[in-house]
Length: 89
Image 1 (cartoon, rainbow, N blue to C red):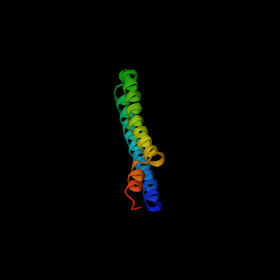
Image 2 (tube, one colour):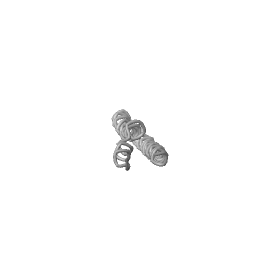
Image 3 (cartoon, rainbow, N blue to C red):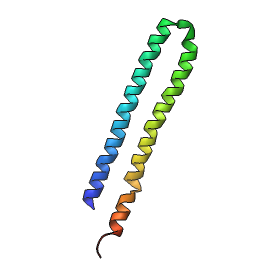
Image 4 (tube, helix red, strand yellow):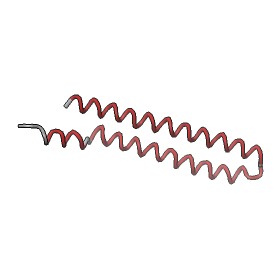
C-alpha cells in the first residue's frame, strides 16, 4: 500500500511539474511573439493584447486542470480503492 501511495505522490509531482513547465514555456513564447508583433505594428497593439490575455487564460486553465487531476489522485485515489478491494483476505 505504501508503494502505491509513493508512486501516486510521484505521479502527482510529475503532472504538476510538467504542466507548470509547459504553461511557462507557452506563455513565454506567446509573450515574445506579442512584443515582436507590437513592435512591428504598434497600431494593432490593443487588439493583440486582448487576444494575448485570452490565450494566456486558456494556457493557465490547461495547467489548472492538470493540478485538479493531481489533487484528485492525491486525495481521492481511485487506484488505492481498487487495490484494497483486490487484496486477499
